[in-house]
Length: 344
Image (cartoon, rainbow, N blue to C red; front, side, top):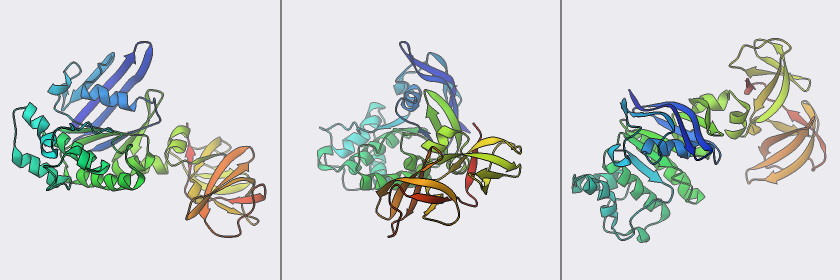
């Protein structure tokens, strides 16, 4: 069953189009991440669904009902934003109960249930100022879920947290996703790790448009566009020539196997996406010639930047001694498998 449907929705702020002809369906129990850079339209799509902005054209449907003109309080959605928006003068329990009281459906048992769900049993009498950032975000999630929303909207909910808290909260959200099979989630983020970890499907957005939509694994393994290949996983895009329609391509004189969503023809000039972790860099031996232009230590790995026929290429290699110096001529070792032809 479809919980959310955007039907060719466009949103304008004066002369600026913030969302253009956006269509998307989210099933009951499904989590879809809206992923893209700032200004791509992802938060605007969320606001159109929540009722915070009115579309200039198109329709928004919840469980099959047109709610395009309905005010936010009549949509029954749970909303979590990055600033938490907790009431500082209210206790944790009162914050969680706020939506229930507004609907004249106060249920102390429900409040306790939600606090247990987010791991905050016993915190009901505390105030937001007495909580960590991660705990405050859990309270915001509990408040959003207390009203039993069919859809939970999360707008950059982890961006204000430090790295460790972000990782912990991401696992909590994954757990909640699995424990709430009747709740659809729409999750706005610019962080690819969050999208890949949490979402069943990822909607990649750019310049107010939806550009690609697929499962997280599908987009990572077979990105359909150059933008998605680079934005999701930071793939290198290398020029190649098709030598066999079965998927053999030649990159700089080396023939490798590459998957493709499109039909290939011998002789086609294409772009091949290869992830940094799939590349090797050696001082000599097999591979295509390149020049080492940068070296950055990242703890367990080094990020090497190379110039390959005018194309900047990144490779992640183990942090071992004996790496060539910057400026040296090196060989890029291409993977036998794992490359993908980018079709548009």
